[in-house]
Length: 195
Image (tube, rainbow, N blue to C red; front, side, top):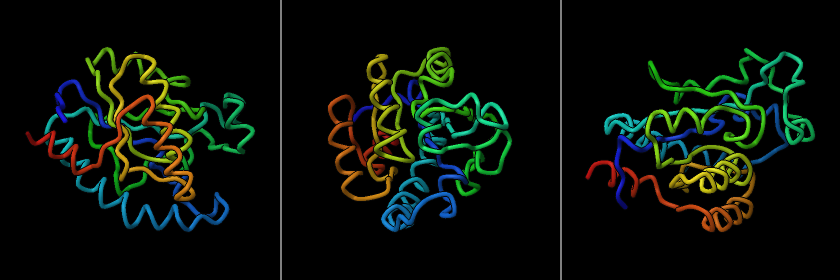
């Protein structure tokens, strides 16, 4: 794998308090086990490596533009996602909090490209490769991977830095994602950034 750091962005999707709080979701033991055993260790090494190499670190979180959520997409309304503007649920988890000038975009749909100016910002910065991490593999990560590919980005899903509710859903999403983007491990990406 070859990566040009100055043309690459590491994207953390929905690594936020709302998603990680079990109170907001039905029981999902696989999700929480995978986060603790796989995702956190992978991101804990990948994020510093990306920062050190000069990769543009960016975040997106689910958060309404309004208090009442009238701006949310239909998919979020049907799913019951309602994270009021400025609420704690919309904050990036403190474990992977953004540094200084890192970009955090608030989205109100499953696809970052559809509900933010992410494409505009990435093109302004000169980004052509996007490393996708976060939650949920079969929802926001998959949507972002597919649309990014259609828009001409080299999309890479970091398999061990993503999770969803079950192993089957995660595996199925990766098969679909592989049709429009690349799948890689955090170790492979770290090695490419260090080269």
